[in-house]
Length: 406
Image (cartoon, rainbow, N blue to C red; front, side, top):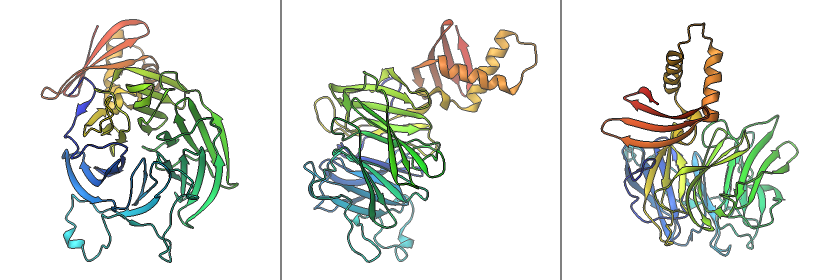
């Protein structure tokens, strides 16, 4: 461990910044970056990398976007909006034996032009003047057939992946250009790959960049947008180019560039509309880094980026989701906490299941969890927990057994 919160993993094979990373089972597919065309797979269980392929030599990557829905879709432009690319990759795990399938698969694990049903090339980009540097996108729609794109012209576009046509263009109510921003769908299942229906065919998204915060609602039936401004914490309001992940109603931000280079970690609760800046921070200041969750949504991986000297790094680190969001505690951990409270309070009256829900809600509201120490060999976890009515409690989990010390 480099510090008490982030576990340093095996370094990435090359220095990397402005990369895109998508999840495939126990693999993180890392798709190039600024000045780097190579793509790798990182196996989360083996802590190893394997080379997949390279982007074509004529493709210049500068804040590109990669979306994942069975086939990977990559699109973007260079720093001045030119040399747009739109490519697809049929990915087959490089960790499996694909030699026996070579006759069944063609053009797998390589970037090829995105084409329509008549093999005509498709470029995602309204015209040559649209700058897709630092573009962000999410997939949604009633059949996951819509690609929502936000970019530095402060536009939001909807591209139909079935008809290969843009079906909607709108302007975001933001004063300053956005790029390398946070753009996620409000979701109930992991990283937000499927949007949450609010009613009929309505879908909701969130966008943050510097001082701008928006809640975005798209009505698929009427093909219209509604925008609602969201307050942004002053701690993060001067930054962009941060790594971020979204799970359930929580968005976590790591680092960023703007007023200096940040090493802080920030949390936004969508449900409560509240911000938090954690005392714990990244081991080093970072921006242009990429972040993603694992398949179980309990580990966060942060890859590459640029440091405070503006040098691309090969750093790869992991942190536990539950250290930043107490609601991610496992049922067994919650059970230990409740059992301890019952014992120490000498509760002799009847207990009902609703008490469990009340207590865990209290825990989530009042605990500011700060990770103190991790010892892998002894399998020990320590937390320092500040409660509203208690000076402090030291919580120790040893081999899945939980203890408190006052």
